[in-house]
Length: 265
Image (tube, rainbow, N blue to C red; front, side, top):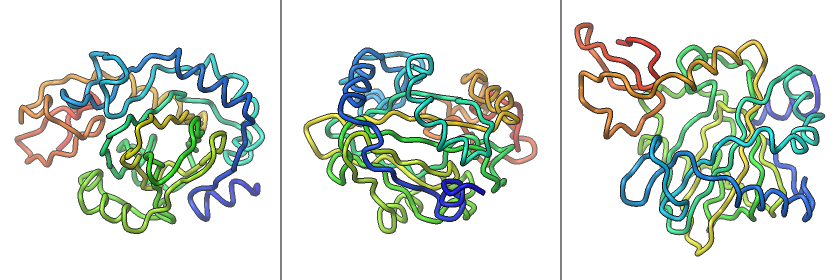
């Protein structure tokens, strides 16, 4: 077992300060400037996954994918990621996440693949999430909070984003506060969230998800599934749980989950 893998399996996360130098950070900032939003929480319209708006209109947003534009970053991270995932892996998603000034967003959650039912109960290290601080991260500007040891816990999908977990994260979470160019690498089962941005400047991260090859295609199917399916409870427009439907159903009240993966009870 490699050194980095041991840290992730034991603690759930690790921080590498100033992994990227100032010149590399500038390249990241330039790439972010030239990459348009893809989805996010609009300040007035709420969650938007289909209509794209100017970036300043979002509380926070994810950009379009930029996997091809970040080959140089992937190469620099390779020794660390290959150590964590035992040599073989594939980059699944690479995008920017921006918390704009005034964002009050807190949503305690876990990441892919564990947020989807086929992998939700598994504890093996199937993937690692890399968060690169394109800007300085702090308590004031929405630095990511992560709950130490939470990758070893089981959180029902019905509790993701709940006040109970949000409060627990606020109370006991570690706030990633680090200079630009630093990296937070964590087990995707770890409970975490962007925190409110009280400053007057956006806070930008580059997110890079590496996964084991044996789950890549299955996970791709979940992410590419249609986001609109008939909902017997008529909750699609107001659902804040995408991409996982957590509404409880009786046997005769089955519906499509929001990821379009078929009927669930």
